[in-house]
Image (cartoon, rainbow, N blue to C red):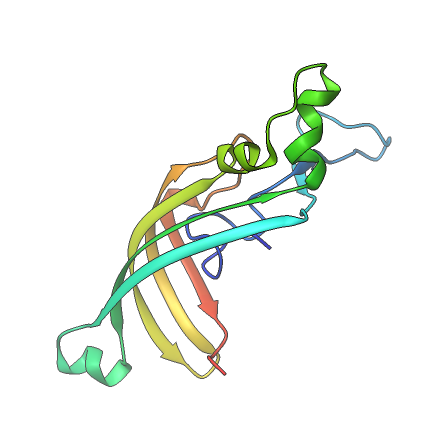
Length: 150
């Protein structure tokens, strides 16, 4: 799964990667229907997060931390990395070049709180690079929960 606070901040869960137009009840695709996420075979994400305890006794009691982060990643199908240009009669790009061309990135800041269910995050995000069809969080506000560390 690519997208969401656990893999690629700023994007919705399943918001990155190959997509297909959803079919209507007649079985035909329609321009006004949403696209479905297809997933992929090649996934890479990386992130950097710097955090510090929030000042103040109340924040200390809650275990709240402020953080700044950056993330980048991509999700591709194997065919999407090599087959599209070749199918159009063009020389195929190298898979590495095609992968890099599809990278998405985001930066942001937020607050994180420990809970019995895991780490609750409230973040403001700014997507720096996206591809057509990607689904990003609305208004840059992202709320998510990460499972507790084992």
